[in-house]
Length: 268
Length: 340
Image (cartoon, rainbow over all chains, first blue to last red; front, side):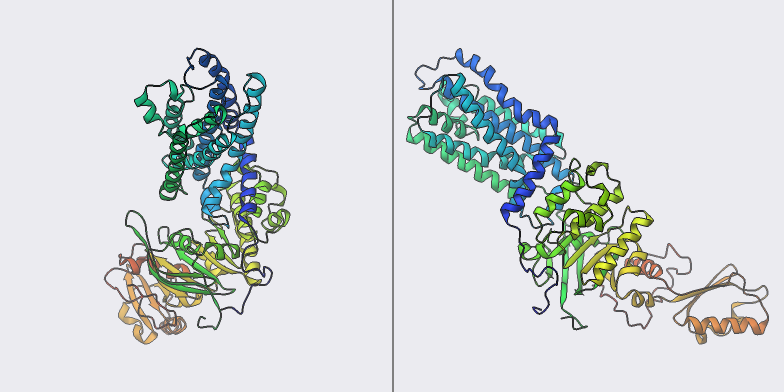
């Protein structure tokens, strides 16, 4: 069995690497994103427009005694919006579209591993969210008189957690629909719930205690909490622990759900 | 090693595939393909061709049985197999907003030892379509783009699932020519098709799948030889069947008469035809509508489909339900697949 090796290839193993494969896929996805104007618009501009409206509503809130500043609320909220719109909403569409076009099935016949396909397709959205975060933070610091973060490592941790968690949640959401439109519809409850309950519009600190306890368990809450705590500093260790455990749990749950339920082919 | 002493590149033993709903699409099939061979899986829609190929490609795990591609399990050892195989699915998927060139470039980044984009596209005659969006390609062009991707990594083993479906006659010929060249260069090819002509033209060996089982396998000639040849003519006025020479002595295995038309089936076409013509010459009668034909792969295919399903003949009046087993009574060298 071993005597014959094919002339011309000579190689038993492949010469591509996970990085080269995901880079090729990400490049194609970035090209596609540039050609899907509606998705691109929603991903780029919604998170940038949100803070404008937010800053006026926060001005009317009583933040005294919460340890929060207007700047910390705006930065954490806009990063939350970035995850919801630039990452989650746009990836739900991407995964559904690639599945319906049989692209995922075709990709699975190649050298890419399953996780590489999902991660490679997510890279452009994740990159956009990262760039948006930097731009938003810079703008907030420049325009809103927000100071530098007190505990930047919490903010970084929160953002990284979010950038892994939300593509996975997008993949799960896309599994329960048969079309791009259906997938968009399926993504609405989580977006709405996150906007209302994860402290992006209304900080948990100003909510009634019982409600705040429940809202702490939502997937976006740990991200917002950690980023906010990164700016204000002085986040109690117990809050950090709750946030990290909740975030890791959601990420693990989403990844498990992807393995369990993700559909690589359309339902026929 | 197979019987020819060649290395088996594809080895399938008792493969079964069951879908979620409990439907058993593949019901225990066994075959192997040696290096450099072109093997065709033939079958009607729903025979289990694609269900089989998807397991071989590593897209799905078998419910039971053993599959080895280049000595590896294609499902659990994807990383070892994928760099060495090329796959063309029955329905390829490409993002419709990418251009042909961008599609190849993306795929090349995921393919070991990829050919240059230009070479890959010229191979399938899409050299002038590099800048065109996939959504603007015709159905046939999309099939050829799919083939280009399958060939991108100069694979040792090529899986082609109905590669010419949707192609016009010219495109089909071009694809056949390309597949022949690849075969001649030593590529092992597993092809599924429902075009009998395609299998007859390209395949060294083939298997006819029916309802998830291999109904017949062998070279096209061997499979064809399992089927009797046919002679048809009108019995001249005033003559009866009994006036013909004893049919058994002519090597006729089966006969029937519909109106004045006589149909004979034989495994010894020359002997039967000669006997009949000599009788006509001596008796000085004309055999109107005389039709003498060897078995074709198509006939074998239809016959096997009927036999395996046990359905009464619906496609050919010369075989009816009252004479079962006649078609199977043929001592040829083709291996009849065990119908378990």
